[in-house]
Image 1 (cartoon, protein in one colour):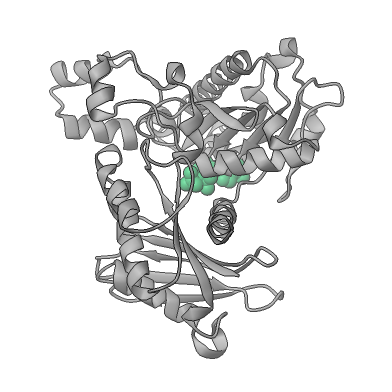
Image 2 (cartoon, rainbow, N blue to C red; image 1 turned 135 degrees about the horizontal axis):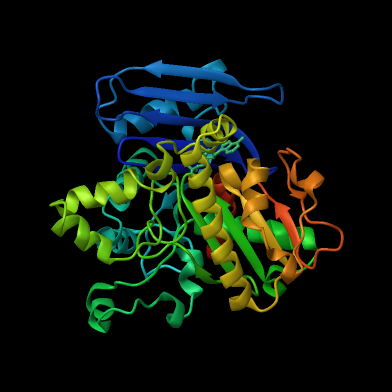
Length: 405
Ligand code: ADP
């Protein structure tokens, strides 16, 4: 079956067409700057095994509907397209950021599911409305084709209450659902599954720590295949030091910024989400730039790296205590997959727990999973590239199979 995976943002739509009979990517693309006069549709088409072909259109894309229409036109565009007609697509799979407490698993979209995603808008005011735009447009463009929602939060719904309740007045949880939810669930679940396969054990028997370090960063403790704690919270701001997001803070800093500096809530929100993290410390949020600056002696760049990796170490150690036994530790996403220095610094001092990296293995660069721990390490440490589109497509196929059974 061919499936179209859609990640609809406020001004962009990312999409990928996969043939799930052999899990090959037929096309992947991006519609950008929706609503602006200089919209852009990019699509990489893979009509055969001989590399891809890039198509790019620059034109006004007034809304999500015309953006999606454009993208589908490119997929079905005569000789250049990769499918004959849109009815060749058997399912549309949507990434939805916040499922709140309503969804533990992916689900076929119907009116009730749309209502529940709407209900969760207060928990993800930027993301859920954009995800809903994508769903509504896809339902119009593909009437009758099953549409599945895959939630970033779903994998973490197994986190026990002692790990997800904030120490705030309890009625905020009861009345407003203020609690920790966690994100990047599709990625953590995917690499956990891949790691279990590499360890030769069923996922349900594996205790793992999955370390997702990209622009957004999070670490998850996986016990017997289920998430039991994760670093992101009610919103994707808690926990690790990220590209532009601060991660854990003394909450009274918000009050300080307001009282002492006179910032209003919108400004504080912007600072914590867009002007903090690595960027806040050293002015750069791309780890490659940070390394280049460190090699020139830039002290702030060194500090930013040290602050990030120190926070990683604290959470990895905490999750070792949460799990008691760890079978595997996985690094993934842009930084996790590509940066041996971050990996090495994030596991500094773990020899006392029996975790040892092999420096030579750690310095390898591969597109497929590779082991980086030493032969005598008690815990296997892997680098496993994440693939959220494939994970979303696989989970959607499972939903379709279970509804057809
Ligand atoms: P997102 O969270 O946006 O999906 P990615 O997982 O693609 O992010 O990660 C993006 C980040 O990965 C970049 O900001 C950059 O810091 C980092 N990155 C990408 N390639 C490398 C590399 N070769 N070395 C170090 N960091 C890298």
